[in-house]
Each structure stands twice: as C-alpha cells, then as structure tokens.
Image (cartoon, rainbow over all chains, first blue to last red):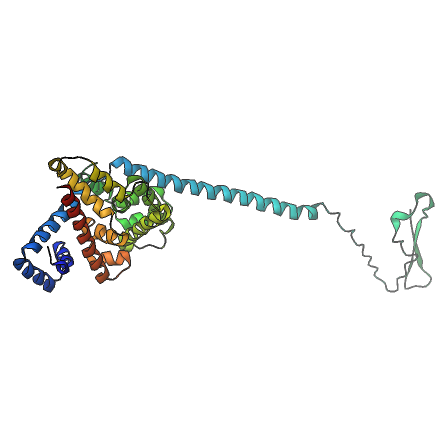
Length: 161
Length: 197
C-alpha cells in the first residue's frame, strides 16, 4: 500500500474511533484505493485476532493466590501494629511507674504542731531545740515550758520528759 | 486458562453486593468485605496487568501492589471513581515495574527472534496459533503509552474519553496513540509473515 498518510486514519476507523465526518472520508478513499482496502481488512482482522487472544483469562487459582497474598500482607501489617501498640503501652506504663515511684517512698515532712492558747500574752521558754536528733541521751534535760497567763500571779509550768 | 464466559459467570456470583456497601464495610475494618471487593475487581486488575506486563507472575505482583494501595486509600475513594482509579493505578504500577526491572529477562525482541528461527515450512508456520502469538507479541513491542491505550481501548473496551481519564491525557492524544499503535502492530505482523513466506 502506498497511501501511508491514510494508514492511521484507517486504523482509527477500523476500531470505530473515527468521528462521522472522518469515517465518511475514509470510506470514500477505501472505495477508490485497492491497496488501502487490503490494509483495512488486515487491520480489522488483526483487531479481531487480538481480542480473541486476550479473551482467555488466567485460571481461578491465580486469582485466589493473588487474593491470599494481599490478605496475608494486610493481616501481617495489622498484627505488626498491634504488637507495636502493646510495646508502646508497656513502655508508657514503665515510664509512668518510674516517675511516680520516688514520691511514694519519700519520707513525709514532719507535721507542724500548732499551739492555741486562749488568753493573750504567751511566752514559751525555753524554746524547743531544733536539733533534737543531735542531743545525746545522757545529757537530755527535762523540757520545761512556762506559760504566762493574763493574771501575773498565775504562772503555769509544763515539764516534759 | 478458562473462557471469558465462565469467568464472567463466576464474577457475577461474587459481585452481587453493591460496591458502596462493600466499600463502607471495608473502610470500617471488615477484612472479609475487602476480600469480596477484591473478588469484584480482580479480573479488571489482574487481566489488565497481564496484558500490560506480559507475564502472570509480574501481573500478580502488580495486582498485589494495586490492592494493597486500594486498602490504604479506602477512606479517600468514592465508588463512582473506583474503576477509573483501579485502571490508573494498575497502568502506573506496570510502568513502575518495567522501570524497576529495566530489561526484561525475556524481552519481546528476543521472543520475536525465537519465533522467526522456529519452523522451516512456511505453510506450517502460517498457522492460526502462530498468527495469534505474533499479534500478541506485536502488542508487547509497542511503546508503553501506545500499548496502554490499545489495551484499555481495544481489549478492555473502554471508550476513548475514559481511556484519556485513566491515562491522564487528552482524547486527541489517546486517539493518536491508538492509531499509531494499531498501525505499528499491523506492520509488525506483515513484516513477520512477509519474511516467512
């Protein structure tokens, strides 16, 4: 066939892809050109054989194998995420426990004693020594607390061992 | 291999459930629903991949990649766009496979050489089986974009606008790819049998 410039238009028309105007033009040329008629029939035949060749499908087992691979992959990734979530949860709990542990074992601060005396001027003497722990037992003296009441004639002494 | 009619019957039995219901269930984490969704679209993906990649192991690798991608993108996809999306991802996965592999272990050019060397009797050579094989080979020898356009238009039967959407091209480009591809295939067959006779 010598009409090379017609080949692509004929190929398009053979597959039903040419517009109406283009199809009419091609049909007119085919009516006048024997070489293009041969090309046209060869093209139609090629397309039919190609469709026939590819009408056959793989066996069902190949589809099933592919599905199994995909499902296996998804399940594997799901288990992986679960494992990761477990490890993360355990790690978070461990960190939390380590953070809280020292505050639970710490020695509580000594409780402050508040003395409330109803009547006003209150003189406490002598003051309780702050370094109680350093006082040796043999040198310990009884603690004497003198409470001055509003009446100058009444003084209360509190002697503690 | 089994015929298209048998496979179509099997596909209809598997695909009674509406894809939107399957999509919703699969999105909610129902793996059985996702498997049913795969059954519905496996012919589309695996057969297109086979026609583009040219071998069943490659087509299975591509299909696995496509369905895993579908699983990861379930939340983003709408039912209406699902078929186009699957075709597009399949075509792109085949392009990627071809680029990753570089030269194929058995390229179509080598196969053409083997075909040309086999058989001395021209009458015997011109059998229908050989004609089919040569034509299939001619498809595989096309540049990847022309081959994709031919596979989607002539074998999958998609209309040209849909082929253009899948390939991300204009309709004019697709029509040009289709016509050039058909002419090249015809030329390959004519040259092959012209040399043999």
